Image (cartoon, rainbow, N blue to C red; front, top):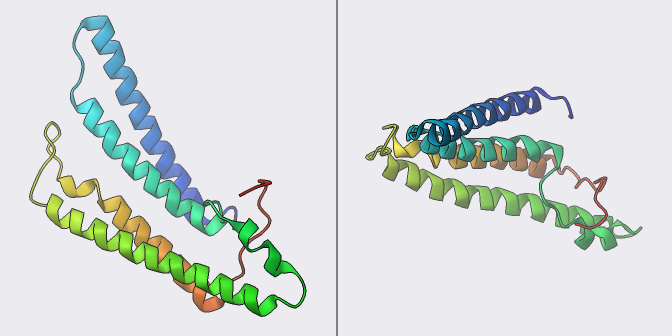
Length: 164
């Protein structure tokens, strides 16, 4: 799943966000120090793109198993004779991910609704655009975790890190 279309899309979107942020901040720095005036919209735009980039990255990282994991807690269940306990722990983990995504999604939805009535100070975009990526990301990750729960997909222990 390393080269899935989701991964390619998320990488391209994150690169685009980072490129626009870098150009906006660089231009603002040059204008401020070189000409004594900057672009006020640069800060708002960078903040908005950074929030989107983080949640796009979180969504793309989930199916690859690149989120923080405490697999060392499950290591004792890898011993022979403990397969049932490992399956149960795996199901519990997927269920907890779905639950946490539901809670984050609900909170993000409430913030989106509140943000619909207000706009940003400089650029004038709806403030709902700031919590929207949290809502979309939690929905996507929750859906992926639900599929893993239903399928009974095992936890990946093949991480490159020594301690997690």
